[in-house]
Image 1 (cartoon, rainbow, N blue to C red):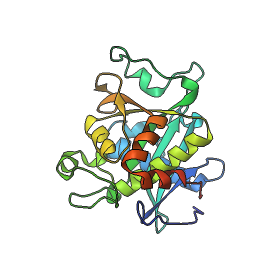
Image 2 (image 1 turned 90 degrees about the horizontal axis):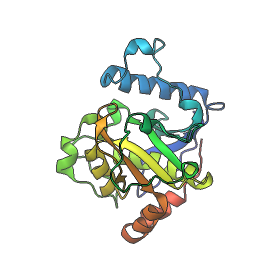
Image 3 (image 1 turned 180 degrees about the vertical axis):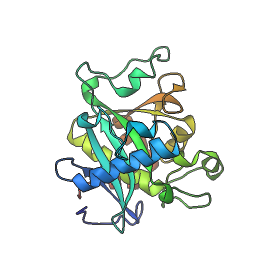
Length: 241
């Protein structure tokens, strides 16, 4: 993990977000796969441990994904997420599980889209009730306290990961983000100024979730009105590891 840390005073003072390039960052990618195993196999039981006998979780979508990590000041892996590109027939993983769409929903062009997937935070870095969010980021403490521990990550870690996904998306012509998530997480993200629109009914896809989509141009406009300093911080991102 050869990251150079340049902490941001306002929004993420304790974590660095970075892209994980498989051919270059093999040690960090292995740590991410081990974290995925801990969360998906051991903690949540979404997957059977025997499906990952080496203690690392991966799947067929990894080769078609961009990977991102959040590192602590001590260079420990604190969080992980990936952006999955459309497959050969221009579909995304969520479409295998969230089949139905709400009336009137028209999906954006697949070539300009990616799916946020495997968003997770290491157990000892998850936010506890009473922890204050970064300056300029608003969350609802009462609701956050009720959210399942897995869905209650540190706002700084979320911001670090989303910042890197945003920078990657700008560089690669991605305008739309899909995500399958619990409504409570969507509300928390909205209060952090990451607004997603629900496009389908809830279903069982690694827990009860619904499909959402976000238009990054709408996100940029709304953020420019509500929190221009956060938008400037997001735009200033670059790959640091």
